Image (cartoon, rainbow, N blue to C red; front, side, top):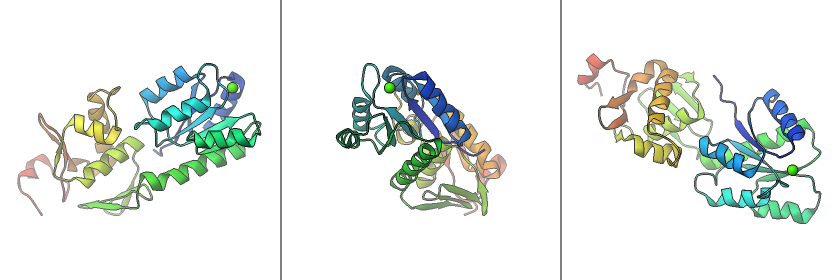
Length: 242
Ligand code: CA
C-alpha cells in the first residue's frame, strides 16, 4: 500500500480544521487534527508527521512559539512546517520563517493552493533527509533519493518506518542491531516508544519484502540483522553462498 503522507493540522477553529482535514484526505494525505498546542505535542509524541500545518493564532502557546520549540528539538526539527496565517503583514511572515517555518499560507486559501504548498515543502525536504545514495545488499536495492526499493528488479512498497528501518539495516549489513539501538537510530528518540514497537515494524518489513524478508534475521536475545546475499531458508542458513 502506498504511504499517504501524514499531516498534523494544528488549528483551533473547528470549522477550518475540519475543512482542511476533508480536503487533505481527498488530496491523498493522512490528516491528524490537534486543536491546541497540548494536543499537537501529544500527537507528535505518538507519531511524527511528514508535515505540520500550524495556525499562527492559537489559544495558549502561539503557533510561532510552537514552531520555534519544534525546530530546537532533535526529534522534530526535520519536519516541514507550513504556517497558516490570517494576516497579510510582511513582518509576520518573516517572523514565521525566522522561527523555522518552511513556508506560510495566508487565509483564506484555496484547497488547490494548500495541497500544492504541502507537496512543495515535502519535495524540498526530501533531498535533505535522504542524500542521493543507493544501497545494495544482495538482490535488494534501496534508492534513498527516489524512495524506491527493488528486489530482483521488482519494486516493493514499504511504509515510511519500514523504509527507514530497512535503509538503516542495509547501510550496516551483517551487523546485529539491538532493539534499543534501532529505536535510537531509526526512530531517533525512544522516550515514548516501547521496544516491542521494533518487533512490530520488523514483522511488517518482512511481510513487505516478501521473499527477501528472510534476509532480516532475528538474533535470539540480541536483536536483528540483515544478512547479505540471497534469501535463506532456516535450513540453508548454515551454508553461506557468498
Ligand atoms: Ca486560530
